[in-house]
Image 1 (cartoon, rainbow, N blue to C red):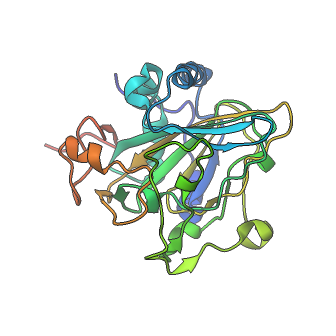
Image 2 (image 1 turned 90 degrees about the vertical axis):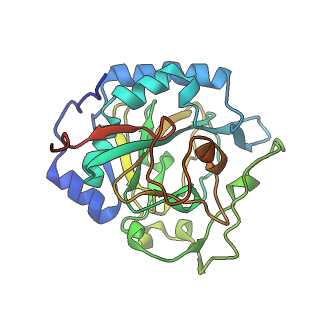
Length: 291
């Protein structure tokens, strides 16, 4: 089945904001049926996580921050969302792409009252692909306030500095084995600045959001900085990652987390290739190819 169009038109101002800032909040682009579908899929996913799943934080009260990725092959609800929902078209419109490939899904589930903050980072340097035309569609499945949501530094996707990024492999309180490491120190040109010390100086933005809203952000933008939750309030987030026209497979010497190089090679994809196969399927095109 073809992807569904968004329930409203994406405005030129929203596209311009994404290009300028690297991030835009798009209200009301997913109907309730998509939120309910993802919520059901997440319940099934949490009951049977993948081998990549891990806890990023566990406090003395037992509150956790759970993360898992690339579960869509085993969760039918995720498969349907990827292939049929408006997400692919939204990504394509934001990226100005002629075609869009799906990369992977990731979920974040925070217990009510957790105080763990997401370290500031960029996504694309960790990935087994390279390119500017990449984005994430970040969707809360429950209401979230701006002060508790993911935050962003507008315009930071335009920089070329190689930062000494956070080693997310160090977030492993349960001591899980075979966790990917992400040590960038050998190639880093600078430390990520202390954005949390003065968010206003960096123009940090975040938004109040309801289920059905999404934030789309370029995968090179600096983001993090929040996730703290009040007592009685949890956070369940589904994200989908999308690849546009300039993206190529890129196996890096350092930092890949999650490292998809083995599974990519198993599917016949190698360094420098365009995305493809059923691992990274093409989901949307802007128009039919000419004949």
